[in-house]
Image (tube, rainbow, N blue to C red):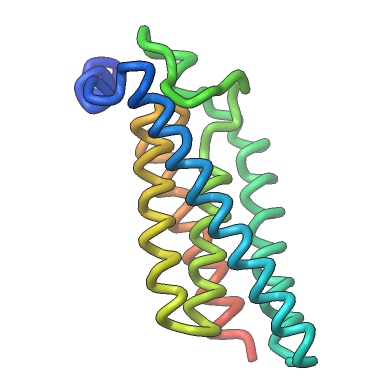
Length: 165
């Protein structure tokens, strides 16, 4: 498959300056909402002296550290380093494309919220899907980067939130 041509097709509707800015705002907005929801969940657990606080803090930290180490070890190139069209999202980093740290963080936060409050977690999963979409269409990650991030955080979250007592 010619990913350069495929990317040109999927990003074409967002190539105007106005739509590219909207895509960037959507990406940043979802990330901000997820980060705020995570911090609020930790704050509420701490205020109620809930022992779940430690798991809610440790599991996402482990996922973030693990995905960071994996990115560094793999050091795969980013799409905009290989494709003729530049990214729609602001980006200057080289390498360390896989797995996507934004998507991995969004997914582990969604898992944490789902573990604590399934309704909030369901909303967080929708926001995670939007982040995954914007990272691919924005040209900063390949689909494999997003899939690897979801799989990695899914495994860490399943083990940390549901299998470890």
